Each structure stands twice: as structure tokens, then as C-alpha cells.
Length: 237
Image (cartoon, rainbow, N blue to C red; front, side, top):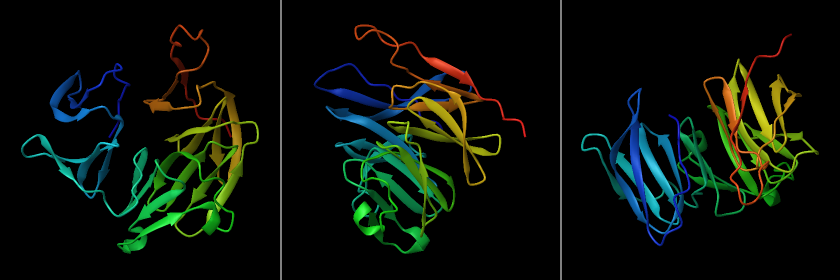
């Protein structure tokens, strides 16, 4: 499942719509939400598609009727700006400090992880992005110079002192790739390798079909920056 979202024009009311890509174009499925909110986030969990809107509640897509219905959050203390399924668990961040983890190990419980209760293994409570690489591997990026790899019980810490933000993660060529504000890296086993300089605006990158997309801050403030792309190629050796 891929997400393609944009910021709508500034208005008192915004209409969020769900579209399906049919291989050639996007076809509207239904309206989701109308309001003054931002930051829609779609995620699949338990065989269902959910859409969480920051400050605007959560919706379940009904495949039989091609519409949505309002539902309650899954677990307690659910974040709204980053949500990933890790097997039967749901990991979320946003609108709170730290990480909310629901149902890890089929516990049915919600656990809140903070720097104060992880023996300083969690780098920061200001989390920027999360990524599920496997059923037991969650990458956690920060508004800080490094990231964590979490396997459900322990944290591995990777330091990137020259990066302001850890912008995103993705899989390609059998490796996990890490994008900082200014550089792209990959993990070779447990070793972090610098691959190439690649500028971003510190907010988000998109990986799709062998290319990495970003919106660098190259243009003047009055002009929107052009989109920068980089063809990803596996490293030799």
C-alpha cells in the first residue's frame, strides 16, 4: 500500500477523499472527512484499511459498500502522525512524547515508551518518523542526530551527529536505507554506511520503484522548491 497525500489549500473546511489507483489513474472511492484538520494517515491493520486524521478522528474503510465509518482508536494513547503495523502490534507516534505500542506479543495492552523508562536507550521523545522493516524490527527516527532499531525488547542506537533530522527509512536491494536531512545511508548488517549526499527539507522522502524523491530547500522563500530525485543503485561488494 502506498500513500500519496498533499497539503490542501488553506481554508476553514477541507474535504479528505479516498482514491484507488487502477494501474493508469486515480479513481475516487468516497469522501472520508470534512473539517479544518490536517495530516491524514492511512494504514493497514488486521486486514482492514484505516484512515487517521490528526485531530479529526479515525475511519474504517468498508470494502463491501465502498464507504467509511467512524471508529474508535485502536488501544489507548494512539498517535496520529506515524502509524505502522508490526505483525499483530500497532506502533504509533505524534501528538505525544515517545512511542505508543499496542498488542506487542499479543498482549492486548498499550505500552508507552519514553526516554525516562527505556534506560536512556530511546534517543529522544521527539520522534520524527517510524518504519516497520519486519515483524520484529521497528526503525525510529528523531528530530535529533541518530536513530533507534527496536525489536520489542531492546534498542540499538545509531549515531549520525551531522544530521539534524532522520527523515525516513525504506527497503531496497535487500538493505534498509536511512535518509537524514542531507545524506543517504544504508545498513550493511549492523554497520551504517554513508552512500551519497542527498538534500531534503528535513520533513519527508518518498521511495518508489527504485527512485527516492525529496523536496529540498533550494528555492527562494517565495518560490516552491523543485522536486529532487535520485536513482537508487545497490552498492558493490
